[in-house]
Image (tube, rainbow, N blue to C red; front, side):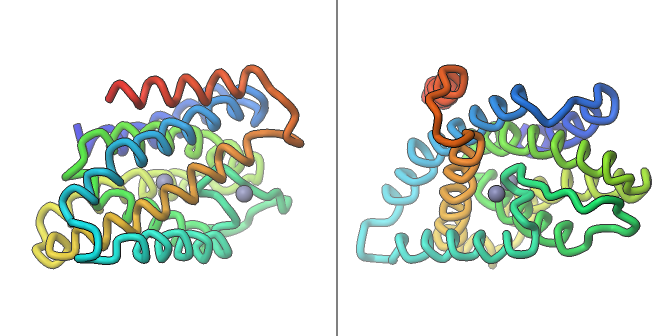
Length: 225
Ligand SMILES: [Zn+2]
Ligand SMILES: [Zn+2]
């Protein structure tokens, strides 16, 4: 399940986008708002407290590693232009593979896989978070006329990255040794990503009952895990 959920969610998103061709509009915004709130709730109710329970405060500066994660994600977004939180920019036709975006998105997804082995619930969080991203990216690439092989290679690699991170962290002793530090960095990444998703899925800060409902739904559902 840990491996399958994040893998299938991206492939599922890809299939939805190529078969239904949804317009990047209101429904996707709502799905994004839900995913951001779900992910943020999981982070503050599971990941973060678990880390502090295992390591008494002061012994290791967890907070600094969280800030490094936030900073790292901000740097990644210089290259991906925000694809990790469902932000894409139209530049007409795409004649070749968007390598910078691809590599930064893969690093992001790989890192997110690391703590999944110790936190089963995070697999749901990543799956819910990557589903709308996969739909939005695939739709964008189809519109940009990226060739089908590159598109498939892109989404398949993106899908494999998170389970690969989980596998690496379960099998490589080095990664296990630095589990706390790595998880703190990932928490920083998730903080930045999920709050940006919630922020950007709103338009002009108008009160939006549908969006608020999705955010509350995300909190409630993640609260049950
Ligand atoms: Zn953005
Ligand atoms: Zn992600």
